[in-house]
Image 1 (tube, one colour):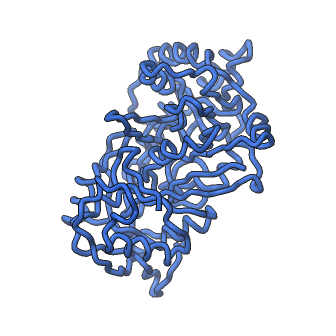
Image 2 (image 1 turned 90 degrees about the vertical axis):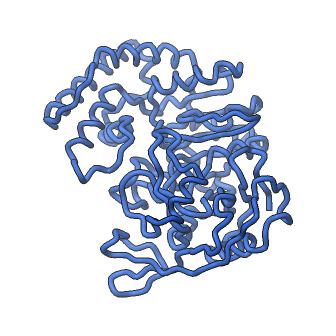
Length: 422
């Protein structure tokens, strides 16, 4: 069987830490979608590590880490990740495997991304400008470049053909974008040499054989469910399926092979970039969450918007993913609030509803809150469930009852040791 680990909000929930915590239970960690816009932060032994494409199990020397076919890979960023990990003496050749069917982000994809976003003006999506959207567009347009193409004798011809197509598209956008393609390509081709030293696999065959042989597998998602291309707050979403269904298509495993579905959420809500956010705060409470929670993007450094926990959105994400266990992150950030609020219904077009509707833009939706007593205690040194404050346990119990799924892990700080199993 293969277990899934997913973010249930707009990303940045703390998935990397939980993958790192759980990796000792698994033989294989497999990333199934997204690109290097993901920033999975791991903290242990006093050191902070940020991974963008490489699965979060890489620091555990017993685990095999697989980058699945649903991921898009930028060789330049991948090389930088490898360089940053070089001092740890990790065995990349045997412990880090890449699907031949994963698509490749070319330098011109990044330029296209910037041109497209610039053309949108005020209507921009909030892209990280890493070329991810254009790469997925080429994938669905059936003319993408895949990892397996690097094994072909004529791969540079294929590269040049696609790059020329992109340059014509960039001219069509007619926006003022400065770039030095020659410099970008030199960096790209150097990174490709490094990438080709790694092991490419037919990942769907590898994973299904592993399942047949009784290996334990954890599939790692990127971003969050509310950024899913189909079920997120479209068009302010990412370009892939971040939900449980994306694990099946992003790894080539059947739905009946899925076991546990771990859903990660923050004790409050954050969002990076543009898009609707019904519980967003613009007051001292929101500023306090941002400061205490150090809410800045691991990949971009952009400040995250903060707000109260939206239980309507959380229940929606639990439903579409088939979540079996919840894991609550950053409970420690809410210490010191006299009163907490959770969104329990929306006002939508003159009606009170308890589900996520088609459009949650501010003009359509306002929120109704339930208030819950807060707690003052510092959670960061706590190691056992019976040490947690009564009001925090009440907060967790309210969430569990509302969404109908148990919270099995409570994170009380960023370090891997600051994790309490309930």
